[in-house]
Length: 268
Image 1 (cartoon, one colour):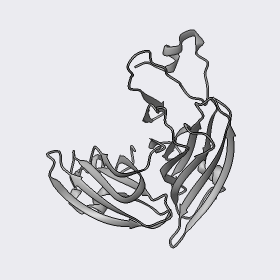
Image 2 (cartoon, one colour; image 1 turned 30 degrees about the vertical axis):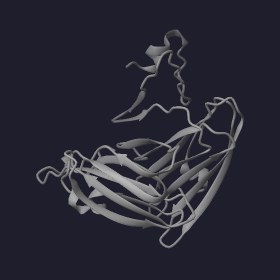
Image 3 (spheres, one colour; image 1 turned 180 degrees about the horizontal axis):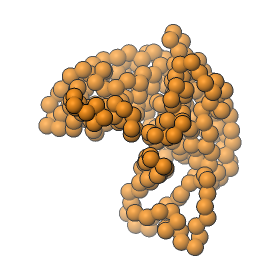
């Protein structure tokens, strides 16, 4: 574990943006990146090669104390055209907004969702939704970084999902509850997005560390609909549960992301 400057030595050039490519001579490796800002840290696992031409984020939040940046990298040898679609969740409808861009081989891109999709800088209410990235060539990788736009007191990074699923496991639960010190409270959140054009029925099952079913619930997502909610509301029996897993089963392909934070949002 070293800084990029330590790894590259005399070849290091300070950059505001870009990406790091690692090639391993051998059976393989596991990679993790830690980014430190003043008062905040967040991390990402290394992205690996894939053959998907469409990738997704179930998480888009803007306004009222939140920003979301979209990061994309073209690690291929091809010139690619990309169409970005934001599915903005309204009270009774889904508002679709699109943006296009092109990336040369090994080019990266980073921009806020407000600029990409023409969202108001200071909306009255938080704008939430999901993102779909369609590329003319497979292999584009990316992530979303979201958090506090003022001081970045809290921030999180999530990779874009390269494969849809109908059954998946989130391998941790942290719903800690401390009545004497709310700052020690922790929550588990889920963002679920149905990218399809038909209704999707989703079952959420939560198990403790011994494999015992703690509780379950079922929700229905309409076409392009998403939900972002804490696990303690989705499955009330999980209040106070620390350690365990979340099993998601859906009738149609699904996008899902899990995150953790505390009640005071000192971390995310």
